[in-house]
Image (cartoon, rainbow, N blue to C red):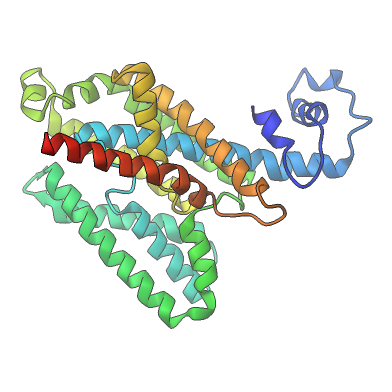
Length: 321
C-alpha cells in the first residue's frame, strides 16, 4: 500500500521505480537493485517528499486511534476523542502565538502549548489527590473553549496571518520530514505498547469503576498513568500535524464492530486501522485537485462528521427508548 500511494501525485512515477527507490535504501537488498532507469528527480520526490509524508500520516493516525480507544474506555463515553482534554486547543494557541509573534519552530511552541494545557486541566480537575473523570471532561471543555476564544481574538488583530493560522489549525502533514518521523514514531510506538499492557484494565473499566476496584484494579493509579501517556502522544502528534479530528473517534468504533470490544486486539488493530485511514485521507488531500493541496483535517472531517451525527442519533434513540 505504501509503495502504491507513493506513486500517486503530480510527478508520474511507476510502481516498479518507486519500489526500487525504496528498496535501494534497504541493506543487503540494495546491491541487487538496478537503478539505471530511475532518474534522480524521482529519487528525491519519493525518498525526501512522499515517503516521509506517508509514514508521518500513518504514525499520526496510529497515535490518534490508540488514544481514542483509551479515552472511550476510561471515560465510558463512545464520543470521547483524543482532543477532549483541550490538547488541540492548547497546541493551536501555542502555534498561533508563534505565527503572530514571528517566532521560529512552530512545532515546538505547539508542543509546549499542548503540554501546558494538559497540566492546567489536570490541576483544575484535581480534587485532593484524585482526578474524577467527569471533572476532567468538564475542565477540558472549559479550557478548550477559553483557548479557542483567545485564538479568535488573536486572529482578529492579525488579519494578515489568518490564512496561515487557519491552515495549521485544520491539520496537515505537508511539511513532513524524516526528522518528524524519527521524533514521533518512537514516542507513539512506545506509548502504544504501554497502553497495550493495560488492555485487561481497559476491558474492566467498561463495567464501571466500582466493579473494577472489586476485581483488584487500582483505577485511579491506572487512569492517571494512561492519561499521562495519552497526553504525551497527543502533544507530540499535534505538534507535527496540527489538529486532525475524528480519526480517534471513528476508527476505534469501526474496528470494534469488526473484531469486538476486547482491548487486547482492539488497541493494536485500531493502531493499524488509524494508520491506513490517515494514509488514504492524506493521499486524497494531496492528489484530488493537483497541484493544490487541501488540509487532511478537512478530509477526515468529511468522513467523520456523518459518523459523529450517527452516534448522536443512536444515543438519542437509546434515551427515548
